[in-house]
Image (cartoon, rainbow, N blue to C red):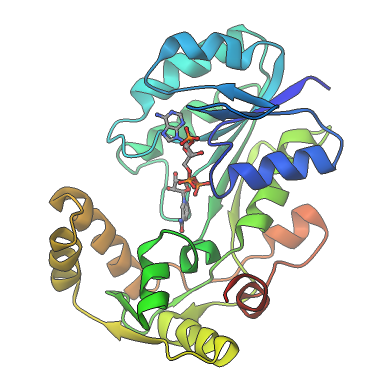
Length: 272
Ligand SMILES: NC(=O)c1ccc[n+]([C@@H]2O[C@H](COP(=O)([O-])OP(=O)(O)OC[C@H]3O[C@@H](n4cnc5c(N)ncnc54)[C@H](OP(=O)(O)O)[C@@H]3O)[C@@H](O)[C@H]2O)c1
């Protein structure tokens, strides 16, 4: 099989997709704006001159939306045209459970990817890895207080490693999936429940404070996030509060043959 190009190859899901592909014996090309390691290729959404080399000799692409673009199709459509013309047959899009084909901006990408000869759209719920690293929720874990506008509604947090495992099957299975996969963890938890799992395992005080959507948007803006984006983030919390993420699917197990990782295991293995 020819190489698989992994866009966002240094990111939370992409680097796991690259590792999983290589473990399974496939040649993976990790796209990054600053290549420095073997197996990486320079790719910048905003610099079309980097696209031809990245897709040369590639059969399948793992595609993430360009970060922070209100109208990402403007960058993705010409890239896909060039990629398909260069011989790429399969495209696997990392979307989100919060995005449908009707969602302005990001929804357009689902339509574009479905036009590839072989495709899959991954629609994960919120990542467990938001509780680690640079994410605001992770900062809350470190501060001992996670603040959201989700009330006591539940989210079926999903592990980035499970998303990567599904992506690898979608990229390499002989039969294309040609479908959407809604990916969740094995159980839905409120942020308060997640905080108490973390507190119990780390022996550190961590709690959840529920605030209104308006006050959450205002404090995100005060922390330096542009007001428009802060409003989008707060609105996503409001969707959760209305129950949008309170459901569990079996897609991880159905596609990979092994159960999805639990939040408890994630905390035990990744939160110190
Ligand atoms: N977090 C969640 O709970 C959640 C839930 C559902 C869906 N999602 C979706 O997940 C996606 C993010 O995926 P992720 O977490 O795996 O990625 P990520 O960790 O946010 O990493 C972003 C990647 O994009 C690359 N990148 C940034 N600017 C670029 C540019 N101009 N051109 C090319 N590459 C660029 C970065 O690579 P370099 O810096 O090396 O160039 C990096 O590898 C988003 O679309 C989000 O909607 C997230």
